[in-house]
Image (cartoon, rainbow, N blue to C red; front, side):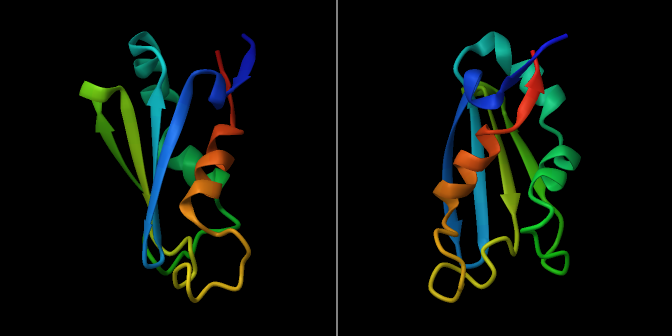
Length: 107
C-alpha cells in the first residue's frame, strides 16, 4: 500500500478561540470520507501535534460531519493562552491546518 499527503485527499478550515484551535479536514470527494474517518483518529492527530498540545488543557476531540464529508478536531490548549498571549510566531489555527495536511496517510 502506498502513502499520500493528506492534502491530496482533503483541504482544511480552521478557527481559534482563546487557547483552543479547531481544524476541519474536508474530503474533496465524498468517496474518500470513510477512509478519512478510519485513518484520522483522535490518537493519530494527538500524536501528530504531541509537541504542541497542553496535556493539562484536555484531550483532542473529534466530531464527524458526514453531510459535508468532514472531520472536525478540537485541540484545547494548543495555542498556549491564545493568539494575543502566545510567544510562538504564527500559532494561529491556519498554520495548524496546513500542518495536519502534511500528514502522510495510506492511500
